[in-house]
Image (cartoon, rainbow, N blue to C red; front, side, top):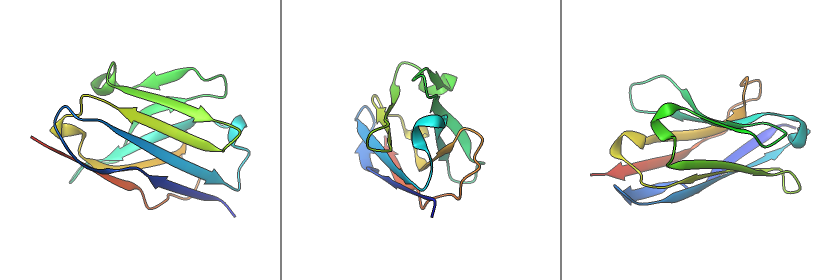
Length: 114
């Protein structure tokens, strides 16, 4: 059974940091390009960062230099280190394959106060 479980969100002041984790099961994790997606209030879900099996990262412009995506294929876990957080980073964060073919998890809420 495919399952994605996100964790690590919370309430943080602007300028603070959080590290998100996504535990994946039921897939051959190491073969998939994985991504972190964000859904801000009233907006569509968007890709924030992605990392392929060769560990080459992609970042959307708004998070470049602040966020770092990584993966541990032995633990089937995806990470997102978020630094210098801004209020506009607020939203529910989800992980999925880059092409979003898996059932979505419950996400983890990130709230950045100004």
